[in-house]
Image: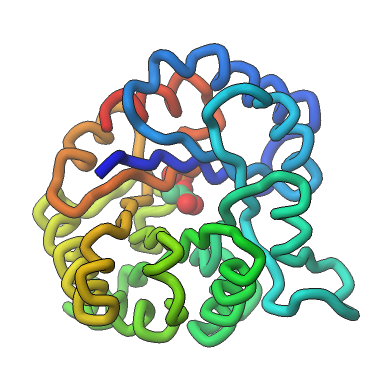
Length: 246
Ligand code: PEP
């Protein structure tokens, strides 16, 4: 399956920096190999980045959306609004949202349903804490999050799962390749059990301190169908080098 390399820009940059980063990725697209690329800027920069990437085969997404289609939700953004301005994807259930905004699996599932209804591809994040991994609970935690977070129409719409161990995000630490392979296999098993054959065609991204020096080895593992990249996605050359390794 064609790998997807997604950049999560989080709450970084300015308008000019976002446009410059998008422009540099566009200019270097030939270096990205066969991978499909997605960038997810902060909300105010989504449309300027879409404009900066015009004509390039690089998708743009949001980092969150509300579960409701519209309404009195000050400060929130509806999935249809993202779709309206040309976004195609939305990251949901990132561990920073689960931790900082109290997002439960049920909330993530409702947001994913809203994304599907609006025609966006949800990129649903799951991952265990360090304490959970040390307690040997990584797999049941992650498969439990999948049970609770993925809506019924997820597979039919080609939804994306991102496995991001919380303790690997922004820390420079990663699980071993064997640990990544094992949990991606468990995720694949869960997707097949839940969605049948369609679950075999869904992308499972790895995220957590992915960088040019470790990307190729991680991306070569079975059931690793791309990456969700935080810090390294803010440097065009690093983002493209990760994609080249896919
Ligand atoms: C992320 O937050 O999605 C992420 C993977 O971050 P980093 O690559 O910086 O660990």
